[in-house]
Image (cartoon, rainbow, N blue to C red; front, side):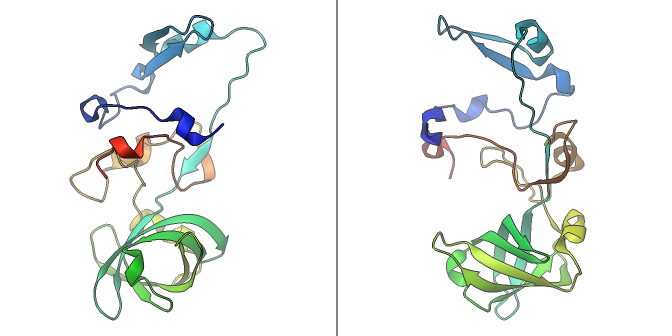
Length: 198
């Protein structure tokens, strides 16, 4: 099985940009595996489809505000970083845009959610075969403790926001009610890249 098996076309106008007012009003798509027929419903009807012996898998991973923004200490050029794998305290692999400008030893001054430069700095200390940058953070004992004031929730690319710093709604609702730390750098999602806006 490959992730491509789950790709499908979804018109942009059908993608909800905000969650429903009530969590239990979320929609539910039910597939009858025997007939191949689908049915639309609401999440509250999920128990009606469960039978003895069924397994329900819950994702209890809390999404952390892992999207960071910063400025090249030397040139002032802007960077966007998405933390993807923690190696150790203040040491992460990250997706960095623009990657070509994030050369080894580049120092990036972190910005807070208001765009103000902080005393926290990241230095590019490595590049792997996938183009990810290894970032070493300084100016804090643990970058985890600073993410609430620096980081944005990394929404999927098909969710549009006018301003990069999401409102509290996203921080609260882009989680399950049973999510527990430590968490993920993104919620599990599948989308067709060719159908996205970029």
